Image (tube, one colour):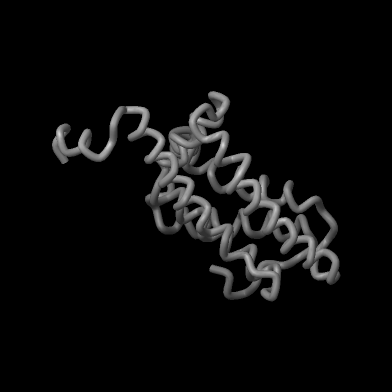
Amino acid sequence: MSKSNLLYYFSSKEAIYNATLAHILEIWLTPLKTLEADGEPEFELAAYVRRKIEMSARFPEASRLFANEVMQGAPQILPILEGELKRLVEEKCQVIQSWIDAGKMRRIEPIHLIFSIWATTQHYADFSVQIKALTGKDLNDPEFVTETENAITSLILSGIGLAPPKDAT
């Protein structure tokens, strides 16, 4: 796209940046939206981890851009974090709490479970250089992706008293 076409749709660099961040949030939040209260937590959470690893593999630059924005105090997206994202996370915390209340998983503050999934899965995008330096592999390697999904799923689920489903991967 030419610069003139780009500036036709966006009034400034800040407008382009804001649109990019909004698009990143839309993409990154899609997997969280799929957690359903009527599903079994081990299947729902295993699928969520799988989708988050897939996102880290497909869009590592987007993850790093978002992380950089947040580390700077979220000057452009704070209203989204305090609004749309907060509402979505509260809704999904209620889903997790419903599983806890039904005795389907160990008690944990749901928000910390979500944060842990975000931290472990997005680490592979945000720190891909470090991971490649230490392992010689990254999320471009399908075997490493599977190994990563299995490890994170096992860690997360065992931490809440669940076993990974046999067909989680």
